[in-house]
Length: 469
Image (cartoon, rainbow, N blue to C red; front, side, top):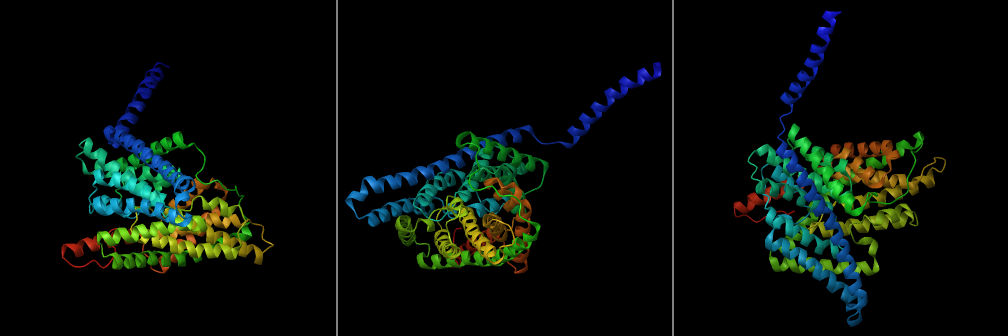
């Protein structure tokens, strides 16, 4: 009995000590980097959330001016043109004059910075992307806010590294990635998608270490907390909650994914085609660039009056589509129309993203597919809205080539967790067929174009593609 009593306490004392030593030997993450990632997440959340609120404020102010003041002095269409053209001018001017790297979504710039190939001039990018994005998106152009928030988040990560004089290269890389994750988390109230976007979509550039994973998770969580404290905890998209479809209907989701896989490759090629067209027109001359951009913004001001479904990022259009009221033929017309307006706006180099327009396109085609399938196969019990949600994730996965991110993003944005299986099937079909057709992921394609143009300019050769993306 005495020997047992002596052995027992010594064993209990030894186990915790060994466990603690083992934990400390494995976990070498500097606490300072974790604390800085909290700060990056909070600032990214504030930037992303107030960027969204700013877009709503500009849009509402534009509408009130149009109705109450300017509309009484000028014809309504002319007033709408002038207001939106002025807002777009602000975005294009700030980009071309102060930070060309802030054009487009900005995500390829962050990927290039993570790979050490692009400089992050955060002191220029942050104000240009914020206020330029307010102008471009506030004018009614078909652009999303997620690209700007990701680039602003990455810029905040680099800003914190500079202000706190972080010398370690891995720590600086981790804070840059953490800011990007926080930016996406705050854009769509989607913390898991923010984490997975960096880990999955940015996998060629992201350094998988214990410190980087922790920093990304922490930043995404705190950015999302900030978003929810300001905007509330509801999902970004309010739409019906669907139950899981019948097993017999799952093959339709695979067919939808195949169609999106084919379209995704075509979509990415359209992006480069329209960028080529715009650069041939303005030739990077500031006057031409501003004139074309302002005219384009003004045209979308007129479209806001007469064809509002063809304008804006498209997030507000998604619940309208899924609540019914559209025929399949009208949905396809809107789908084709929004492809054109998306390409015009994104290809022009305006400071805005393409996530939201892609989600709207996926919803349009997916719901039309659901309506057609329901007419031909009435014996299968399913709601066409299921295919709208599946389409959102499929087009994202086919173009960006990040299937898990697409699934998580759609689920978090819509709260339709019961559709996880059809979403996986649709996204899988889209990714597999996009890869079989040899399509390149969208942001990798844009980054390669940017690097190629930089090389051409260094050799004093004319750029063959868009100088900034």
